[in-house]
Amino acid sequence: MLEKLGQEKNYLSSIIFVMVLVGYPIFSGITIALGIESNALSIMYRLIVLTAAIALLLKSCLRYRLKINLGIFIGSSFLFYYVARMFLEWIFNSAGVKIDWLDFWSFLILVCLVPALPYAWGENIPNSSFTPFAIIVLGIIGLVFNFYFIFRVGDSSLGDQLFSGRVESERLNPIAYGHLGVSTVLMSLWMILLKKNINILAIFGFFFGILGVAASGSRGPILSLMVCTVLIFLKLKLRVTKFTVMFFVIFLIASLTFGFFMDFDDIYIFNRIEISMFEDETRARFFADAYHAFLENIFIGVGYPFESYPHNIVLEAFMSSGVVGGVLMVFSLSIGVISSFKVLKDQNFSWVSLLFIQYLLFSMVSSSIYYSNILWMLLVCVLTVSVNKHFRK
Image 1 (cartoon, rainbow, N blue to C red):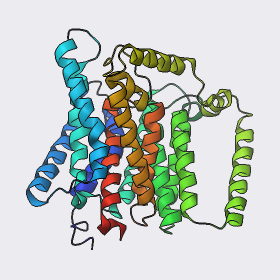
Image 2 (image 1 turned 30 degrees about the vertical axis):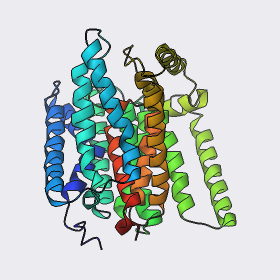
Image 3 (image 1 turned 30 degrees about the horizontal axis):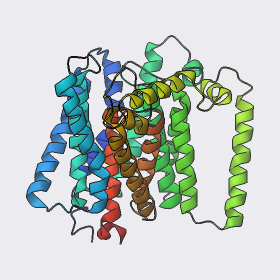
């Protein structure tokens, strides 16, 4: 069935998918290695992805018929309303320095929207065997590459770099590094537990991914990893007794490990978790500012009245585009979650659901609407797979 859809031969969509998901950290590592301080390589990476996505989009428009269904229509409704709302904001309020509009439009349209559009065609869904394998390989490369060069240019020891701070550079923030680790771990667990394919690559992917999450010093990636790991174990359909025993064994091991490492005061990520999982005065202030901004214009929002973003795309939707945009955002993400649970039952494409849930949680604690390019791509993918009977079979 997949051969009829061209899934066995069409690797361009898989390559674009992997480049969007884990390609940027590798390019950021290259800039560190070469000592390049400008955005030249980053722009080059974005242009490569954009050019490939446009080529795939044009090919799809000419060769295949797009089947618009209710799920995709509702799922994309917020983004189209948001673009229209921000376009009016740009025209009538561009004099007020609320936001860098060049940065806004280039990311929203060229980085988020265009690379996501080709996946509305079922024929472009990434190859189910090649894509997870490529994510693990490039995930390991990205994790090791960035860590090595950040360690090399820093003054700290290996232990200090790995545990006592946050692995970051001017090209790659620690949260993105942490989610690179989460993606690598999830694809490794998917391969080992769900596909029953225990191999050295998946084992290394799990190991380096966990180290990446720890080295990032970020709480959001740990939350995503915990939730998606639970979903993987639920999909194993273990009996209640077996599941309970396994859960308590894992909980006991995790508790003992946590207690052991807490004896070392310099492990940054454990200190952050011990102090508070998400109680953060700065984050609370962002939430409060966004809420008060929403109250200024409940119906259509106020655009972007301050430089910082609220670290939650639902709250940001209400703030920037009012109750209409906020409700559409809630509907869009709800359809995505429902679709992801449908796809989670599929043996070959459940990894798409895991990645979507991971980046949905990411967008709730650390991201912004016009920077969530990975989330929008995964939303389109999970909607397309969920309504396509060929994949479900």
